[in-house]
Length: 359
Image (cartoon, rainbow, N blue to C red; front, side, top):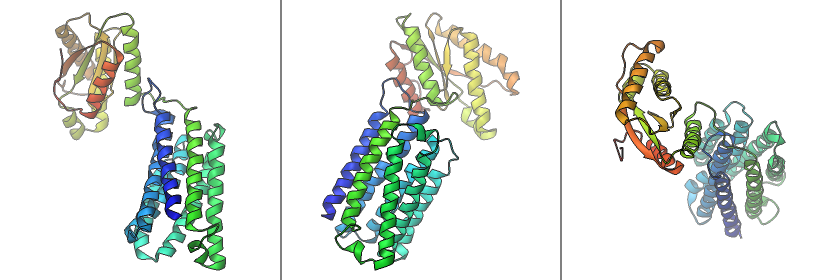
């Protein structure tokens, strides 16, 4: 029975993770903003729950202390990340993820130092705390106003109450009821966990459908979305547009010698220079070291490079930088928005790769 209950918990966690990531897959969206944060935290919680169930199966099959320690840590992580994610969505200070990770690591280590039954009780107490904190956070505004938040809050409240009841039973009758068939046994706990995972996943998907992928201005995700929208408008008027990728080869040296902020300022200045040189162009920084310029291909590439270099040099005194760094260019003809998306993705994943397929 315990194996079947654990398998149900694993299946519920797998379905929950799949549902969440599918929720995030609306066409045309970029990863960023509130919905991305929800998927990140609650998706990681689902993965932690899946690993917890798997470790419990291994422990039942004789996996020993290591499997028990991993199961205890991931169990706390699964519930704690829901609290951390709720804090994130409410715009509160980012202590949730750090605190949850620290507690999970501590639980992993403590399991080796004390009796396994005592470790189970300690984990159960942690579940009560994290579930209660999560329920309270989900009741706060603005998250508490979304449909689905109350379902998760009630689920976590009942999950906290169930685990608190397990601790009360142990305090009154000892550890024996947890090891024997009954309302607080390991089998029942696994079944309750599977039900809780299912209800939380439904609530999380419900919340996710009300949130938007709306990255904050200035972030790379925001720039990727903006460049795609601008390219779509340009392609409605032109058969193709030119995507010009501008890099500062010594940007890493600048960051090391000065600061990361100085390097970002120079890259932003490159984008501003490109807008000065090419009226109507859309510019953005969708990758760490590459400025993208999307514009109609009306000028020769040599003219584009000369105009951008000249505008860049004019702007350098304004940012109090003595030298004028060199710029390198790559030019691509873009026939549809998907081509631009693939180009940005390849540059984001391999920002230092050389020329590939340029005009």
